[in-house]
Image 1 (cartoon, helix red, strand yellow):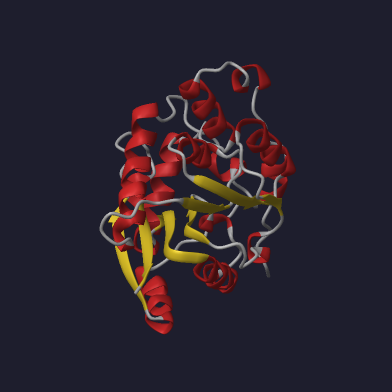
Image 2: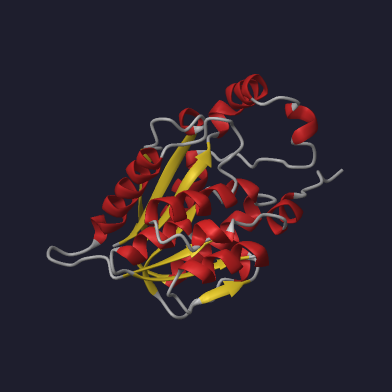
Length: 242
């Protein structure tokens, strides 16, 4: 029997407070965008500094495949949601684009981003053109239905990227039991709350096989978010074109 997956319905109901998006305070805007993207599950949440740590690591990793003297010029995000990550990138002068299936979250993204290349569609409908220096997906692969879907999306991401692909916050298959036990400990009514909201776990071998088949270099990193409750159970993956 197939497990029901109601994530799409959940994301369709998420939105941000417009008064905060219009506040003119970049830090408040960013944190509200992240809240809309679901980072409000646990009471204390995640600090701005923790999100910045993740962002800085991502920027560094994505730039590894660039030639000396080159800088990252463009980034596309699969599952961009409210546009929080793209918001930081645009503030550094990096051209951005994104795709997401939630119209309500994309409405938030369009309110704060300059990017015109924002598309409402399923991840596997990612167009190969135009190409971007790097293509990322942050905290999204866990919501896919299965590895076959994930591989199809990875294929599209690889085609779209000039230099690098980054997939962040992947739930580690080796730590699935510990992850579930911890979540039950910190989230009240966990079983009821997450019924029909499955999480897809990945082995590093899945990405190593993909990289080998496509002639890519692969690198795994720990999730660099000191106060993120899930970081101990997650890993990041970067794929580089040779």
